[in-house]
Length: 247
Image (cartoon, one colour):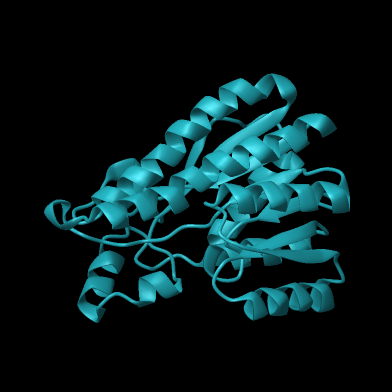
């Protein structure tokens, strides 16, 4: 499905990013992974995909909200592969706080990682895609970005920004055959979800009409669809992967 297509997945050492990397590798993609907190863990993930799937895979360590890191990342991708076919903007952070308790530092960091990194990577990634005549950009938002949630003003705002940027970019890039879409997960079984107190965890699960938490692989499968030729006429869309969650 992605045989020999070059794909860059940010924040891809765990959770949804890692599940996406595995799905892409299973379908023959040439992968560029990214992580910012543990270089050894990134190297281990690269080695794992190479061994299990026999694909070409490399890693770029660094914070993709840093313009210098992003510039060097795409210089590396171009130098190594001469093109980019798929970009998945998955890197993100969550720092919950009620409106009156949101610190300036926390808000700035949340928007930098969750929103500005998407802008920076779309700018650089789309340039490479346009050189090749096509491409697919998939940006990760959240059900909090589409519906809001108490205690998540900064996070929700940053994820809503991802949607606004994506819909505008889709209109700009469609003529160049570069598609831009958004995936908005609900409550997904990641380290972030498991860090919630047990009572809050159960409350979230009970709000899901399908009666269970989603898996990273279920989100990754939607991302795979948007990255592949199966979605060749799909752009400017926001797809919820939430099991009918109500918030």
